[in-house]
Each structure stands twice: as structure tokens, then as C-alpha cells.
Image 1 (cartoon, rainbow, N blue to C red):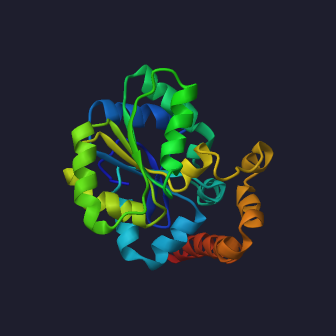
Image 2: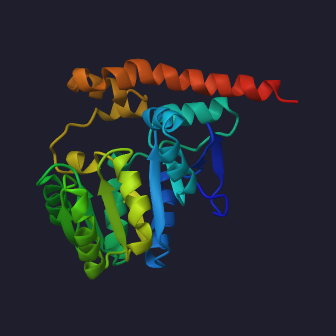
Amino acid sequence: MKATDAIAASQILGIGVAQVTVEQFIEHVAAAARERRRWHVCYVNAANFNLAASNNRYAEVLRSANLVYADGQSVVWASRYLGSPLPERVNAGDFFDRFCEACARQQLALYFLGSPPGVAQQAAQNLVARIGNLRILGARDGYFDPALSGAIVAEINHLAPEILVVGMGAPRQEFWVAEHLDRLNVGVTWCVGALFEYVAGATRRAPVWMRKAGLEWAFRLVLEPRRLWRRYLVGNWLFLWRVWHSTRARAKEP
């Protein structure tokens, strides 16, 4: 997160993570959208930190983003261990309806870009059906040829939403936004991973008690063991080791 931003941040493994509650996050992003500040908003969890450790380009995108928030409970726990506690987990799947309600009240329009064909469109339909006055100006999938990026940017700019929500998975979504941010006529571009799949009902979420206990990763692992076993069974421990190692390294500094 940019050092010039007024939002306080906890430094975790070289990345500034915003010290915000869900309500504060909604307020900050809505204000940036209203004022068309051209913000890049990103999330981090244990897997993202592991990716940043091995991918310098991704790490630099996170450091240059205007707001980076703690999507995973492990990040909140790590911040407490490091002595710079974050107030709570800020997971878009838990509050996206509330965010969209705030957008409807403030007449902020959105555009959805990402997920497999039909998913972002279904997510948009579901939200418009249950939130009065919500304006979603367009929705398209994220499985496009990179050569089409210029046409997609032109379409978004023509519609001129205040908020562009991008769900292509890390690091592709962050790279795409970083490459095109200066050309996008939007106030905020927010990377959200698999959010559209949850909103569309294409993927199940963990029960609320598991989310509050920081066990959503276990629920996802049961649903997709082949795809996610390495991320969680190896990645979670790797993230914890990196946090512990960073404290040891700081303790040795003069």
C-alpha cells in the first residue's frame, strides 16, 4: 500500500495491510469511487503472501496499490503476533451485499469483469434482484484473449462506472489492473478473486461459524482437495514460518 495514503497500515512481510474494519473499508472505497481517485484495491491472505515472496512483480503491485486489506484470518493473527494488530478480517464474500447497498444509496455504478463465462452476469442479476436501485452497467467473463484487453477497456470507459470489480484470480487480476489502470475511466478498481462465483451461487461458502473461527480454508479444501491441498496444507505452514522468521530477523537487527 502506498506510503502516501492516509490509512494506517500494518507492515506484514514487506506489505502494508490497511488497519480498517469492514465499515471503514466500505466508506473509504465509496469515497474514492465518488471522487474518481483511480484507486487500485487488492486483498491478501496466506496464499497471496506466499506468492508475493516468489514473484517480485506481484509484490511490487501490492506495494503500489492504494489499499490492501486482510482477506484471510491468518493475516489478522499474524498482525497480532507482529505487534501491529489489524481490527478484523475484511472478506468481500461476507459483506459484498452491504457494499452494493452503499453503492445504490450513493448512486455509484459498477462493472463486473471476471470468472468463467456467465458467472459474473449471474452474480450481477442476483444482486440487482435483491438490492433496489443498484446499477451494474456491465458484466463479462475473465477468460478473454489478452489481445481483447484494449476493446474491454474501451467498453468500460464508454460506460464509465465508478467501480470496476475484477475477479480473475491472483496474480492475473492484479497484473491486468496495474497494466491498464492509467487508461481506465473509473474511480476504483477492486480485485476480488473468486467473489463472483460465490455471489452467483456457483460455489458454496463455508458455514458462518467456520468463517468466524478462521477455518474457511478447511471447508474449501474438502470441496477441492486436488486443486487446493498444496495451497493450504503446505502454504499455510509456509506463511506461518515466514512470519516467525521475520520476527527473528528483526530481533537480530541492532
